[in-house]
Length: 411
Image (cartoon, rainbow, N blue to C red; front, top):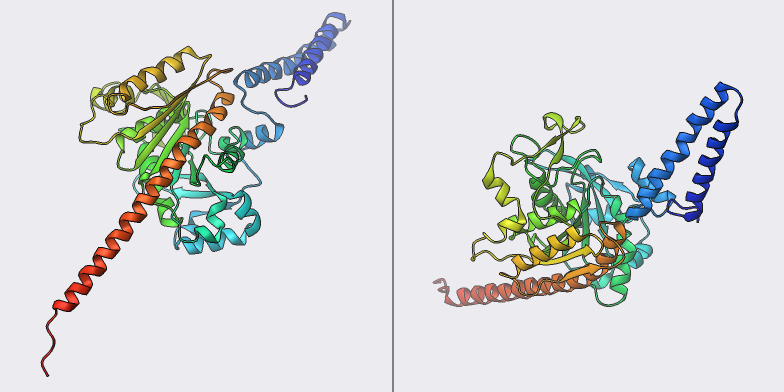
């Protein structure tokens, strides 16, 4: 009731505002009227913010609000790239085991922050990584997990997946139902600050955000965790701006991602908010990166590019979702589905009732997306393992044949 979306909280704000306005009207001295008027501004402002938060169904608890605005998620350990980047998956396991409880991890999984620096982009940001419970179980000791890269919206950062989207309990429940399979979830920072909206684009004269998100983050994950290499056993998904990022990256890098999910995403770039001079921390300025380059604009517009991709290129499989109350999101998703139908006749589109471009829609869409994507990722892992076993058998057979054909030495 007293949460950031609680009705009682909103009523208390209205009562506080009404009481202060009454004080303004009844106060006999000017100084008290001025004080009351200034104080009345506070509940009025908070009420406006709370109303917007309730409409978008964003922060559901005060803890989530504090963690997101402060940029902290205190329950999640921070493991730096210096500690994780030099060793093998075994050394990472050792570091994680030293900061967590093995029994709890094997039951609920573990999420942690890692600092990732791009070799070519030189971007340095935090990524939130979730290892499922199976990652810590003996039955999966030699299993290389598929990966889903999850991209947040703008404004936002990786912590929104925990604080707002509740991705971990939703995913655990999906796996408990038997419909979803285990995968490692990687949640990178796609903007470098809540004041920016980079849209995962490579700015011709600035930050190479797509290179970082699509190539360098996966490279770090493969080097440090027990996962499959980027390819058919990798998925990418996001909501709002992250939904656009996922669609754009998947189409431009079909060799790195086999599956994609766009939740209330759009399918053509809009104006970006980038740091001045391309330097992290700089003043955000509004730009349209490809205003003067129609070729780059087409390539980075999934709704156009998907119709122009060579027929020899395999298009990743897509999952689409939108809130029924947002006609623009629904129309964009339906149009993109029709365009995808030229290459994939079975594209799922979830229209979520009871919301529009809102967090409750994206949370509701996560379960069907996990149920759809993760079993297919698991099948791709099986194919990779079968092919690897077959290749090993062929290599052993050739080795034995070569030994038989090798002439015996003369004595």
